[in-house]
Length: 383
Ligand SMILES: *[C@@H]1O[C@H](CO)[C@@H](O)[C@H](O)[C@H]1NC(C)=O
Ligand SMILES: *[C@@H]1O[C@H](CO)[C@@H](O)[C@H](O)[C@H]1NC(C)=O
Ligand SMILES: *[C@@H]1O[C@H](CO)[C@@H](O)[C@H](O)[C@H]1NC(C)=O
Ligand SMILES: *[C@@H]1O[C@H](CO)[C@@H](O)[C@H](O)[C@H]1NC(C)=O
Ligand SMILES: *[C@@H]1O[C@H](CO)[C@@H](O)[C@H](O)[C@H]1NC(C)=O
Ligand SMILES: *[C@@H]1O[C@H](CO)[C@@H](O)[C@H](O)[C@H]1NC(C)=O
Image (cartoon, rainbow, N blue to C red; front, side, top):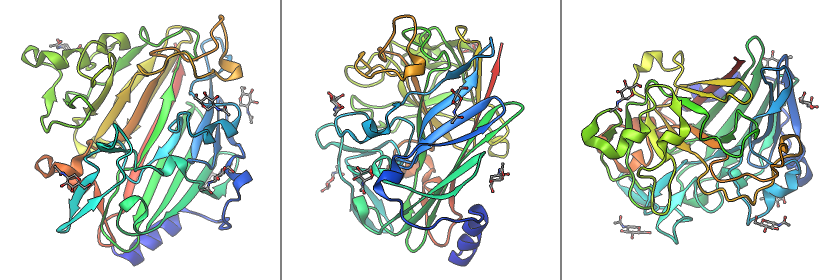
């Protein structure tokens, strides 16, 4: 898409009133809530992140089903987890060796993971660390914007990003839409949300008995000991690829069945990149993931236009992150190991370094391409 068309597209995406003033520091930590029948969601500008999401359980009681902090200041603690509910980018997930080639030039990105071996979630100062501005806010939707400058964290070109969150009723749904518009140069773009889910709302200490169902996830992208793709693509369905069989969630199974397979050194859990194998024309219509907790009876159905899902079942949680006040119950006050499931709708991990996969057209955008759009919808029901 030409720049003029791109500008027209984003003008259409960001209807008035547009508040274009830069967000002050205190504004970036100000919680803003959107609400409709059966659902409400709260956000802050720091990381354009979701902090609370209430939906009704089977008894009709509202339950907060995401990980986060009640006090927004805690998100700015450099020693604490920065990805809770945040937008991650400019390029989500891992980049091998923090480098990539584009238009004949090599780029180096800050290697902020594994003692400098790779990039994670956009570098040292990823979008989760940025203070986004509020571009639009009403009772049912909020749009944050960020203008990322040329060369920041090593990425080429200016990128204008809009993230819109909306709640819808009957059935209760949360929609996330991230539109990223490269204004002047070609650049890798792989945006994602980074929400830590617990549809049981911490009734139990872990989510291993909650069920997961991903009918289109026939393949995974295996990683090495630091979760960098080896380049292979592996079926989850056939015994001769036995390391991947625990990841066969093409039928509904307990999440705990996914443990005991390859998820990097020192990891016993799920931290894997799943491919969504369905016709692209059906992408936005098909339910690609269902998560269900018998404790609350809450079922979540996920749709997305993305080609993959990174899932992580919080194997690294160790009972030090406190639960939010409304989530403390049954003597449980902290998030225990396997206490949540991160779902990141995104394209194939490190696809910019694997041209043989044919994903670069889904990951490299510029003034002469369509804009990057990451869309997902989370629908809630009880049974
Ligand atoms: C973002 O906002 C927080 C909270 O006000 C503040 O601590 C931080 O310094 C701000 N960061 C930048 C880069 O302005
Ligand atoms: C969101 O819903 C919860 C549960 O009903 C309620 O306690 C909270 O006050 C609501 N938040 C807002 C800002 O309406
Ligand atoms: C920041 O996070 C670390 C690690 O969780 C924790 O030990 C420390 O107490 C936190 N600092 C503040 C000021 O909350
Ligand atoms: C790793 O990145 C460095 C720059 O940070 C580069 O010099 C080196 O060639 C890269 N190595 C490989 C194997 O790509
Ligand atoms: C909030 O704004 C969005 C985007 O313009 C619009 O679709 C929606 O109807 C608005 N909601 C209300 C309650 O006005
Ligand atoms: C994978 O899951 C499907 C659906 O439950 C099942 O029919 C199939 O037998 C499983 N394959 C393996 C190898 O476990």
